[in-house]
Length: 182
Image (cartoon, rainbow, N blue to C red; front, side, top):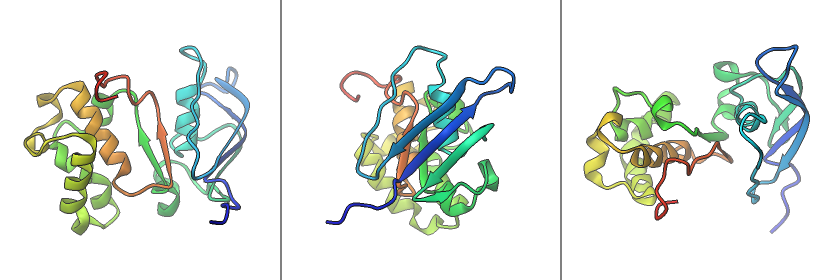
C-alpha cells in the first residue's frame, strides 16, 4: 500500500477566535494523515473547540491555511464547496444543541444524505450506522427529547459518519456517553 502523499487535514499557522484583539489561538499548526487519530489535550478555554470548528470549516480563522486532501479551503460554513464540506464529519460536545428537536433520530442521522441529494441511500445507511453505534430500531422513531444524552450523542456520531467523511472531528464526543458505551 502506498503512503498518502497529502495529509487528510492540514492546519498551518492558524490564528482564530471571536474577537480580533484577543484571539483564542495563535499560530497553531496540525497535520493529520488519513490513517491517524490525533487527540488534543488542554484545559477548558484553551481553544480546542475553536480549532475543531476551524478544521471542520465552520469557523474562519483570522490567519493561516486549512487544507483538506492537499487542497486549500475555498470557503467557510455553507460557502465551502460541497466536496470539502462533506469530507469532514463533526461530532460536537453538546448533542442537544447540535440536534434539531423536530427530527426523529432516523431523520437526524439521514439529514446530511438528504441535504446532499443522496436521500435514496438513507434507509439502509441509517440502519447500518444505528446498529454500529448501538441504537436499537425502536429508538430511531424517537425525537431528541425522548432519549438520553448518551443515546442522542450516539445518533450524532452516526450522523457524522453517514457521508463517509475522510476526516472525523470530535469535540469531546464521549462526554455524554456512559462508561460501557465510551
